Length: 212
Image 1 (cartoon, rainbow, N blue to C red):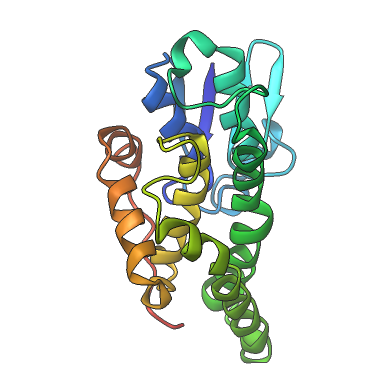
Image 2 (image 1 turned 135 degrees about the vertical axis):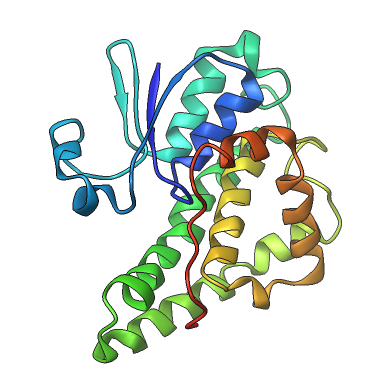
């Protein structure tokens, strides 16, 4: 299997999952944003986005979906990273997994674009609005981690990888100044995992000025 990745990008979710599972993979690290910095990548993935993942005939572009694919396709290596339909918290597990991108990362990508890559003063208000949206959407997560070390089933799962990445991206965007203490502690717990540190070390971290 092969993963295309950029430092700090959503491809960190499946890369972290691969490291947690100890699966063998090939990694290609690209400059960010790849569709601008490495245009020939469009011949691999016409969207020009990362992650791009292949496993035999399977091709995938959605970071949380790749995480789910890996633990479901290779359950013998997933250990406790996944929940199954018969598990009590299965619905919550799926909800957090998809909440991570649809609710948390989406507004971050808009803020990233207009704070840092298209710094048009006329669009600054758009970035501000989406940054506020992200902060407001943390409310449910704040409540959960105030009384739980992990999101579901009292253990670390790919739901934590997916949501943890969104919080990590928030720190890159300097939105972590708004995190509640329990949310900050939860993120620190996740980032201390050796598999995250190995995954994150594969590429130069994305460093952005504080303009928020």
